[in-house]
Length: 400
Image (cartoon, rainbow, N blue to C red; front, side, top):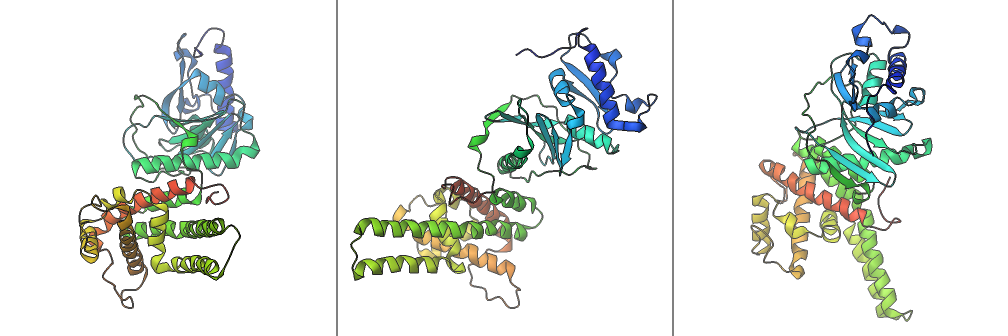
């Protein structure tokens, strides 16, 4: 589909849209003699151009495609701000922080929805201007577009989409992307977007859940290695009830299926043992190990991310050749590795959470000098937990 370009025929429409834009942005305070209130100078428009320059007082001049400009200004009276989400007919924009350098041109698609990262987001700049925030600033935003409109009842789903996209950005950059309130007085410089667009199907991203927000919260604790670790460990605690129950249900189902309704004392004893194993696994001391066994499928890959002193300790305590990796360990031998790593994670959590004067150290605690690297391991574990949760049936999955 060809882009709309400035022509003699559509210039009157563009002029009317600019007038409406001024009324919306400045209201009764509009001053025709104030250069900052002009927003756009039609004398500089060039016939054949497919962009129009809009000069918001807070962000300076930015170019928008004629298609986007007409879409953004289609019905200014319908614009609503809910929380930090700006809804305008077929479009939603929500301002976000941008904790990385360089451009990020990504498009997410799902059914009738198209989601993208935008620099100098039109609707955010417009609301910023309407609210009188004239301090120089620059924004990034997630924009969601549906050509058929976004009705009110879809607002909760829009928020879930944003949560999923923020997780994707955070997981790839290992930095916390989050919604950035208006106004934002932290000015930053942005590189122009000139790279090829990366297109991603939204269905390939994890379902929206509290786990995605907890993951981003952990990444945000970049200045406190202990707080970051505790936040990651909380994800293990949140996942554990579902993971352990599912494990027990599978064991009970197998027992029932194997005996075809014919029970004797031995059959019932095996069922009782399954329940007893469940009761033991919900104890805090073995919680992490059990979750690792049940939810982390790629432990061999993750193990290499552990701090070297911890891998050496595992090798010594287990008398196994695992001081570097698990390449020499078969699946039958992984159970004791899960147990040992889980014990270290639990001891480290207790060592952080308890007063040093009353805590009895076990020797499994991670030393402070190695906490940064342990958090690298925990980040990967928690990504695996999100993947595990995403694969669960709807009645089991943790979700919003």
